Amino acid sequence: MFGSLGLPDLLIILAIVILIFGVNKLPRLGKGLGEGIKNFKDSVKSGNNDTQKSDSDPGPESVEPK
Image (cartoon, rainbow, N blue to C red):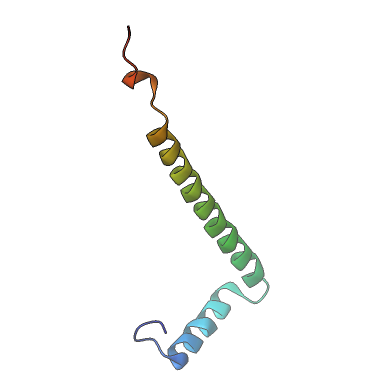
C-alpha cells in the first residue's frame, strides 16, 4: 500500500499525529490540507489551459508587419 509501511506502522504514525495536534485540531488540519490540494490542482489546470491557448493563438510577436 505505502511501500514498506504496514498497518501497524500507519497506526503508530496516526497515534503520534493525534498526540501532537489533538483531536479537536485534526478536522481543521484536514480541511486546510484538502483546500490546499484543491487550489493546487485548480492552478495546475489553469496553467495547462493558459499554455494550450498560447500555443494555438499566435501572439503579437509572431505577426509580421506588411
